[in-house]
Amino acid sequence: MQLNISLVTLKIINGFLLFCAAFILVSCASQSSLGGGAKDETPPKLVKCIPENHSLNFTGKQIELTFDEFVVLKSIQQKLVISPPTATKPEVISKNRSVVISFDEDLIPNTTYNLNFSDAIADLNENNSINDFHFCFSTGQTLDSLKISGSVKEAYSMKPELSIFVMLYNENKDSLPLKSVPYYLSKTNGYGEFNIENVRAGKYKIFVLNDVNSTLLYDMPTEKIAFLDSLIIPSAATKMITDTLKKGTLFNQDTLKQDTIIIRSIVEYKPGNIVLRAFEEDRKKQFINSTARTTKNKCVLVFNRKGFNIPSVSGINVKSFLVEQFKNNDSLILWLSDSTEYMKDSVHFQVSYVKKDSTNNIYTVTDPVVFVYNETNKKNIPALKFTTTINVQQDQQWISYNDIQFQFSTPVSSFPLDSILLKEGKDSVFHKIKPELVPSPLSPCVYFLKYPWKDEMKYQLRIDKGKIRDIYGNPCDSLVRTFKTFAADYYGTATFVFEGPDSTFLFQLVNSSGMVVNEWSDHLPLTKKMERLLPGKYRLRAFVDDNKNGKWDTGIYLKHQQPEKMFVCPDEFNLRSNWEIEVKWSVKDVQ
Image (cartoon, rainbow, N blue to C red):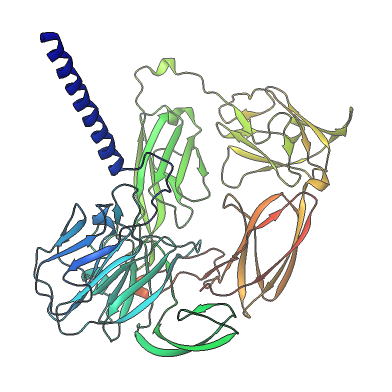
């Protein structure tokens, strides 16, 4: 009897456990699909909001947005843009299916507020974002309804500027972006486009700011900006549009039996295609950033930025030295050549260079510079090494219009041309040739070997040990290279046909790495043929060189000076070996 009861009890327990397991499986299945179904790609939908979107006479301090599924917030503090901006950012939290916005201040009376969430609201499970989500309300009896739109591009590259502020001010004062927060505010999207909605009728100053320090003020010289000198006057007008609907199209729940012309009205908002060119002002002050004397004969001076001119140096307690300059005028190397001078613990110089004041005017300053070398035992000074590197490697394929560059570790004293043995030939037959040896105008450590290299030809370069010496009498090691030039059919040819306004442009041909491979100035219209181009992808750009200094110049806001207008060909072209192509470009403003 006891055994029967135990068996029955065991059966009941087993049945209960099976029921629980089945219930858990069903419950789990109700939470998410086990697979096989289509992935949810639908973003959350707004089903309720307190107050209603576009509501009037709002006096509260909290907004609640409810969606049809659980939601999360993504970088809400960075992505939420409130226009006009509040003094302090509201608290924004997600709670189940809702997003709650709580203001910590009184809102401005009789004002239309626009909350742009961008893509900060997404569903919980699949992270599907609501793109360009807006919420709007008014603290008065009317809702402002005008809007302006456009795009922001980086002034030099003309690439879209992403997530940069576009601001409107209701006064026309140059000092406003520096001292006051804007009245209306928006941010560019992933294409560099912007919309400022719910704008009141009036005249506005427009300004673009990459707000590095989150002050909504242009208060840092490294912040990128853009501006227009003319005021923005938003407007709206009804426009009639004629469309043709093809036979078979579903229209008003009926299938059209023939092509039908319909006329409909739309509201056109202006301006709707503003293009702003963002730039960084060249307001960074120049100064000597660092000095070093790691070896007794070498003094290194580094500026904090690219220089405005070539610095000049004079010695105070030294007379014998060579100056090594660099292309960007951002540093100098002073080579001490007299042993009685470079054995000194301290050497003194004066360096003169150009600075710019707050109004961008140039002036010259002279700073004293001291280089200190600390060495405990000057009797055991290690021997100075004299070495060289060149820009052609063993068995390298060589571009026929390039020069060979010698970069020495210390300044050269003697580099006779007859120390170079250069041979040219095919197969195994070589003959001696005479190149040209040219010292660099900037550096006593650099020399260029020039020669009209022939296509598909082999070259042998040899320099014996001791043929080259530096200013300290040290010999250079031997150098041997064998290389071969590309065949003529390795290169390509491009003919460029330019059209555009009657003006002079500075043109640039840029490769896929962004390097300018050719640059020239000419007048439109223009046809130009370029031969012996390396195979690869290229793009054309051009700018109006307003001040004729041969380079692109940025803008100056307080002088109402825009950056020099850059034009970029929208189409990249691919040049292949032994190809000849024609590229046509109509140079015009980008819209």
